[in-house]
Length: 304
Image (cartoon, rainbow, N blue to C red; front, side, top):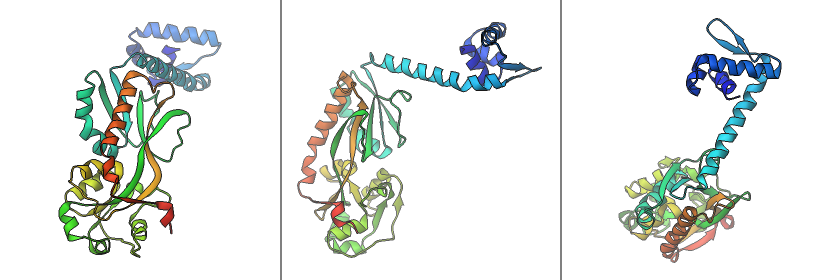
């Protein structure tokens, strides 16, 4: 079956033999034995190539899927005994703005753990993609996995201290350079600029300003003084805590979407996974004071 799988993928006995580190004659014998067992040919032998018969075309997809499943299960089982490598997937913005600035601290506290990050918005498969932990943002649910919320999420205008001096009131924002983070356009109800202006009692719908599809790029623009962005808690909390950005107006919009720590059920108490979970929760606790001066209004309360 392995010989057939390789030959079907390469459409070449020679290349399949090279992949399996056997001679072409040995591989041909294995396929001939399989054909005799099935009672029908799987390949048509041409002068310098081979092609699948109808039986071969029927068999090939199932064999390929079976070997992929076997390989995935094998790797997942081997990872059960690996407590030194931790594969984590998270969105690019969370990786850049929350995880990366704190990794040195985690490495100091857990030198025995080798963190490997996959920054992607694609929904990874824990077994197929060899992922141990996923940090996901959205509404869920994650019923088939172990999942815990990391913190309630809100957005509020954030800017450099210099811009905060120039635009001291919510009303002044109607004249300010505003930055648009289009990565949160999927939120329902919206947590966008019109919703925030409604929350502070101002009838204003801004339309002009730089737009970014990635939240971390929008935050970087705000840090550079380009303008004022509706900053998402998780992505701006460190900059707010350390004074690089300020939240001047004291009003935030909350959303039911949130970041979650997700892993396969039963894996949550494996030593390296538990260490990462406990560390993330402890890091979140360090910056909870950022929310203390905010009046947080649910987005549904100001929905149009």
